[in-house]
Structures are given as C-alpha cells and as structure tokens.
Amino acid sequence: MAKSPAHWLMKSEPDAFSISDLRRKTTEHWDGVRNYQARNHMRSMQVGDRVLFYHSNAKPSGVAGLAEVSGLAVPDHTAWDPSNVHYDAASTPDNPRWWMVQVRFVAAFPRVFSLDDLRAVPALAGMELFRRSRLSVQAVTAQEFALIEELGKKGGSRK
DNA sequence: GCCAACGTTGGC
DNA sequence: GCCAACGTTGGC
Image (cartoon, rainbow, N blue to C red):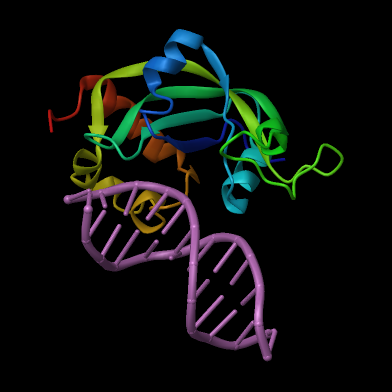
C-alpha cells in the first residue's frame, strides 16, 4: 500500500481539455492515455491523490491548477471505439490494455504557473518534468506539490 | 512549423 | 534480442 495521498502531474492540451473544462464539468475520466508508464501510474492511483493539472502545447505551457483523483482506474473504453482517435485494436473489453482514472476539479490558478516559472524555482530542479518531458502522467513529491500549490495560488508570471 | 527526445514496431 | 525506421510529444 502506497502512502496516501500521493501526488501527480497530469498533462492535457488545453485545446482538447483544459482546467476550465474540468471546472465546468467538475469530474472527468482521464481517457486517451496510450503510454504504458503513464497507464501504470494511473493504475496505482488512489482516491484522494492530489494532481497538478498541466497544460501542454499551450501558451504558456505550465501548471494551470489542481485536481484530485475521484475514481480508481477503470478500462478506457475509448480504445475500443474504431471511430475514436485513440482507438487501439489490441485493447478489448475482455483484456483491456488502457485504463483511466476519474479526476475532480479542485482549483484553477489565477494564471498558469509556466515552465519558465517552474524552472526559476531551485527547489523544483529535480522534477521529473524536466527530464521526462514527454511522459504525460508523472509522480511529483509532496514537497514539490506543496511548493507549486503555494506559488501557483499566488499567481505565476504573465509570460 | 521545426526538430530533439524518445517510445514503439517489426525485420532479421 | 538487436536496432533501424517510424511515429508522437511537446517546447520553442
């Protein structure tokens, strides 16, 4: 049993699904993840785990707000739909390959705490984000999470 | 739009 | 099991 709550960073392209979308919907399934490491992270998540909602491919990219895990991983049914962009014929209802958790909106930062903002904080220099930039679901430490929560709520730069 | 990083696929 | 080719991610 992992210590609870754990802390995560989850990426979404805001054009597809943003922190504002999550605020409007309150909860949403985090579907479409097609990377094994990211999937494994989701399968280890517990309800109540805390999440940094990260906007990727954005202007600027960075942490846009906070969420929490509100539902354990379940099979990602979008993998079974041939018309879905994330369709994967290798995933079946009998033997699902891809999974998704449910997340719940917690807070939106007044401004995105950008990559530049993150890089400017020495205590965050060890973040996986800087080494594994392509991994869409990452673990963060409780210390990193607390610092970004504090700084993000104050508002990042306007870049 | 470019391109570096890197995960996946498939031939052998 | 190796590794080249290929596709995707994501910052810029």
